[in-house]
Image: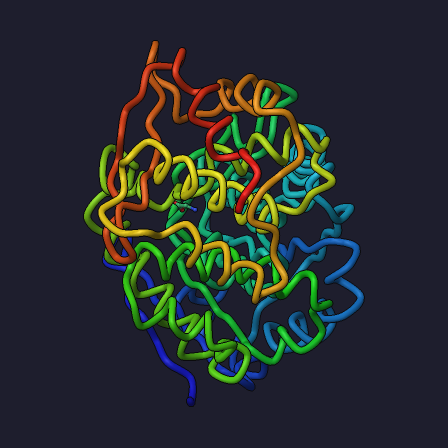
Length: 356
Ligand code: GLY
């Protein structure tokens, strides 16, 4: 499939461009979007050595003056200290409100650099260049930006839509298999939410051969949800399928388990719990767990249910005495269910019970 462009009709609206061989066009596309300005390119210590020079060259050949900033790679560095370093860098370089930030990397860089753009000078424009499958299918789109706090994941952040998202699928060639699998968790999640045809592609192992199509489908699905509920008042909460327990798994592991693997575990736990509590309209757990396993992902966790419940209660999905869970009633039919906080340990325990 050649490059495709998916509109996201938020305010402001933007295009997500996906396809192979896009890198040489990044500069031209961003100049058409941002005009002539300076661009701070923020990347991390893994992605920088691979792609920073090529991205700067593409931008500079289109007339941008670029300044680079590299942060240490990994979720452990997605914190206020690294955010402060990005903000001080932008100020030192005297970027103005007519300039822009370009986030080059996976979900951690995208979330953190996006947050820096959202608050620097009370907001400058930014573009996302996702380099992982996870950031391409999920985190680069929709304008959620954040850093982690000691109390939990993504607890300080802002909604700030990017001006553009540019995804060169050739970048996925350098992903270690485990990192590709990490992104598959969000693809499987989107399959469970959106319906049969995407989930079947995941089950059949067809994603790698159809990357552009799969990324475009995930982005188009997410764009529709975000357009209807940009600030996560209602429908957008469905995109958190697997994330309540997933974030708890990440926290219990001291952020050593990557986001996608934790979401996969959370997806397996909530699917089994939903079945055990009679909340499903068709058997979903065996299918979801089989699909996760076929894509090199876990579908459960060894952390004690009590520790997971405790960690989950610092998540943003809690409101007073209830926590809102996303329940997979059927493939293509997930619903929100507010449950009393006191019931969460039993629900998680049911989802963690040995699988027969
Ligand atoms: N990753 C879920 C969302 O963007 O809403």
